Amino acid sequence: MLKNKSYIGISFIVLIFGIYAIPKIVDRIKNGDVVKGDRLDKVTTHQNDTKNLVLIGPAPKFKLVNQDNKQITNEDYKGKVYVLEFFFSTCPSICPKMNASMLTIEDKFFGNPNFGIVSISIDPAHDTPEILKKHASFLGVKSSSWNFLTGDKEYIFNLANKGFNLYAGENSKVSGGFEHSGLFALIDKNGNIRCRKDDFGNPILYYDGLDKKGVRNIQQDINTLLNE
Image (cartoon, rainbow, N blue to C red; front, side, top):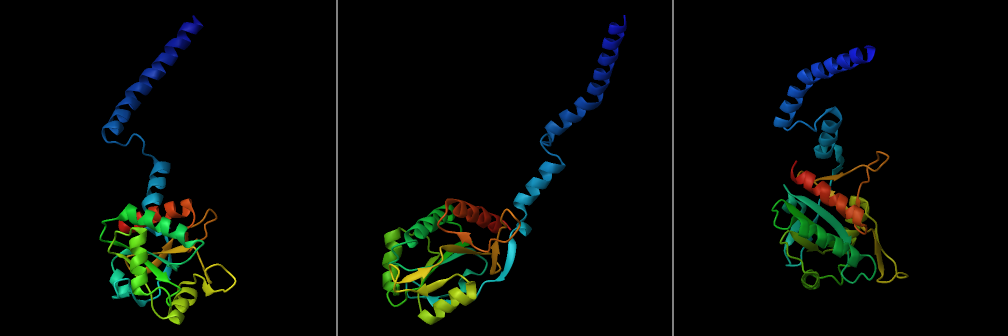
């Protein structure tokens, strides 16, 4: 008898719960809210909020000549998101990998008028506009917004080391005679250097152009800034 009463009590509770909860669940399904909640909403906001990309400060201004012997400045990239690197065409070590990474980025955003790439040579004595044009052709560059730049060596080294704090230097003891960072700078539409944070909450400053994870991260952050 007691067992029967327990079953009746449980059944009554289930019935009351069903009357109260089921209509609410149905409404959430209809509204597409079935997977939403405070925690999930916060995750979505974090992923799409560009405020989570750290603003480092204004990118240094530059004025150089591209592969078509045309003067290019930072103003040509105003209103665009762009990636910037320092390299040289005869680099036998890290540049081929950087080139491959940049080609992957180009392919991802090819045809987007609000995206561009800047590759600045640290060996301008060799990397004339004519050489850089051949280099771009060799790589299979398709985008008209990818400029390979050259100019005065001292100016370029100051731009790299003092402007962007991306190391570049001459070293006769290394293959190729030059050494430089394998990092990419990400600049937003307003001309500011932007980056994400590492696992400890510190700004990474620049993205690793030699690493698949670094390339994937910068692609995600380019997309975020394009939609800003």
